[in-house]
Length: 462
Image (cartoon, rainbow, N blue to C red; front, side, top):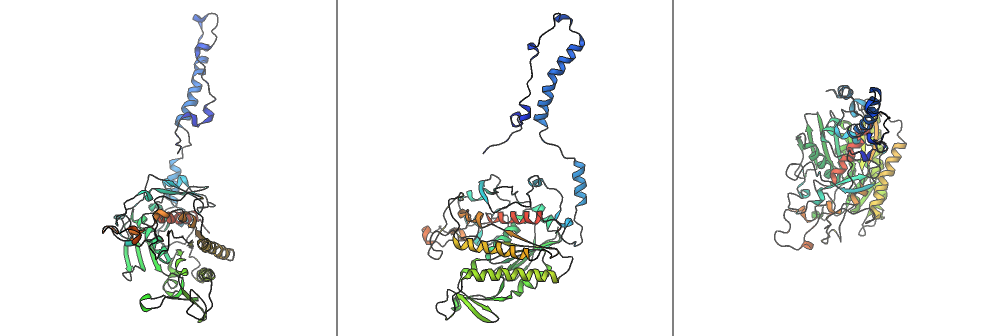
């Protein structure tokens, strides 16, 4: 790694300056009688290079007028009322990370993981919203190298998460994570990142499974909620203990648990995918239209890719419809996190593991077909609904495209440390069940929220 220092060799305009010694200059015939005018001229010749050298060493960058920054700070403070999205919401006071401000066209999906000495903003003991199975630190994972990597996009900069900036952006706002356990993983990550600055209050929790929760940051009149909805549309979940191994998915109906609260949401993050790989029976108009992994039934085998596309597309269209039918002053950001591949070496239900301790480098691994198709479906459906909704006032669709960066992090999963001290009884590693789907916290999932932060921050008055 090359470090740039404030030395003259980094400023080429300084290298052409040569200071001629006085001894090399021709003296007039009568050296003992130099007049004052010539002495002044020689002194100026000697001082000019020194002035330029001082400029290069000590004033390499223009200095911003502090009064201008203070004026901007005062003009962008958020009022205590509930304003619509727009300049007063997204244009916030400058933070120190803004010196690395990303550009609107930045593609966060392509890049590489690089070593980072900073480490995470929280630990397994400093945050109390980490799901137990993802608390790798507390469960005794001995290596810590997985904590010291940062995602560097190919053509731009992704700043380290700034909880103060994010809380300012969601002041007087309601954020919702909706989807499967990956949505929950990302939502809990955001809570830990924000709690490193401001302690939230848990105001709602419906069960021990933590499927529906809501936290409030009273300091900013902001809330973050998590909704369990693994298909986004209506479903009746499988029950292995009752001998029911197929999910029943109703593609033309919506999950009322989150859709009924939609009008109150300002930032909506959807994340689904993994449950579509499970056996399922699919309905439209209360009729079975197909199924997945259903040899025991006399139903048409349906590719889950088509079902996934329909669920995503139908949900985005319904979101657009409800937004248009709602308050004209409401401004809303809707984002979808793309599918993240698992890293099982072997079958997940046959002691498959994920033992790698470092990220893959670009080219070491190829994206497998299923993950690629699910990612592409999300990107295409978002693009379709964007192109059909250019005139929808106050609604913005974005993609949290993390499939590639997640693919490169086989080291970021709990593995056997989904359980506390999995080897304390001397069990062999291959006999311990591994979690190679979800993410350790802290871990790579925190990067998903760094991207979400940037997507919110760069949205102006739309």
